Image (cartoon, rainbow, N blue to C red; front, side, top):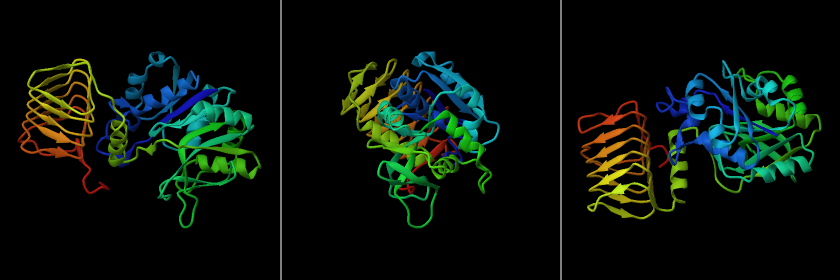
Length: 350
């Protein structure tokens, strides 16, 4: 079995963070989200992975390379235009060869026993198996309607009464049947080949489409608030570790992860929080639920409940910052105004 990760798409709802950066590479606990998906596939003994890329192809390839770092082999397929998930599957046909495959959406973060799901897919002789997650608001998701252990209907972003089972960005497909289905559908009203239409085609042909319910975490990282929330959730599970250097005038409270090359000088750290490699924190307070990326400098500043992305420098802020995402390679100081690299989340559901 092979893996297929979709890493195209513009991520407009995540602007300004994704103006020049792929959303699939945004960090969860200082690790690009797409790496969690590669690790999930590798844990299920899937070592051949195809990554669908768009305009941000150079950044994705620079990070992932040939996959050797994670014990897998990665190849790439360029999708010139965002013509739908089913279109992305179709263009990867040759690289997927004749094997069943697992497809993951690169902007989803989920915890699920993939090996168990694969076993159920094979044992049930299913042409497709979908991961599903109960949600309170269905209008933003593809929704599955089930009877027993099988899916009997799927619909994209339904209106009115509906099932509450969202398709959670993880699919297993029979190679032969899914390409028959894609060949049998037409573009939707938005001009895309929808994977839900292909799955419904299979159902209409009386093929067996199974399901696996996600009991653990699942989030579709579609907005800045989603990105903050998944980081907050993961921070809650941290265990303290210190690989850096703290001076005698610094104080650490709670679960704090300090990576290699970090220097903490005359500062207070209140966990849970994580500080990435080669970062300097000096004369500052870093509060709960904060992720600071690699190669940052935080001097004479105060913050909590924020995501500070790599290569950011923050100096001499007059007041604390909270519920902010500060983008890559940013510079903030006492005179700096919040600009396109800063995304404030207050008022967005917090």
